Amino acid sequence: MERAEGAEGQRDWTDGHVEQWLPVLPGLDPAVEGAVTRMKKLSVHLQRVREQSLVDFALDRPEFDTLHKLAGRGGTATPSQLATDLDLAPASVTGRLDALERRGFVRRTPSTTDRRRVHVELTESGRATWMGAMDVLGHEEYRLLGVLSEDERDRLNDMLRRIMVVAEERP
Image (tube, one colour):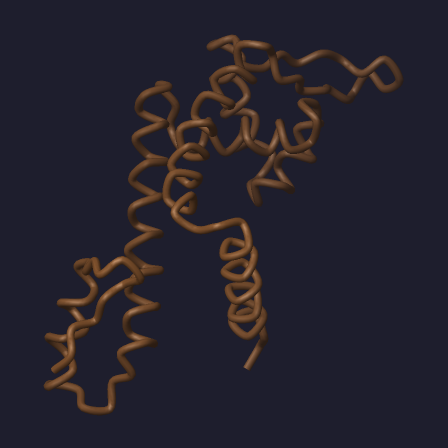
């Protein structure tokens, strides 16, 4: 059996995995198995980096998700907008905001036009904490994809988009 090698003659864990399963599953397409296994392993790796960044910045997942959605709205939103973005009941968002406000990551201010409305604002401390956690993951993504040229990254992105369009179709 010919050794599966990368462009620089390097092997990874998945090469051995595919070789192990080829005799057991003769119809196995090594390219499909290799690509899917590598995507799964990369996803797990990036998830570990993300979780470690949350530990490093003393954030739990719900806190990070709330800061992330708030940052994605330009740093300000209403609790009901956040509830929609997070797919949560408004009461759940209130609890998250209470905790984030105690930590100084958000502040709630009454609306100037409607006394019943409150606006949630990302504080500088909240933005810095969110950005710090994001930077850790971003650096790892660039480290991994930095082995590819810009053209190769564009092609990979286009190929993955084609695959995702099929995955997102309803059968």
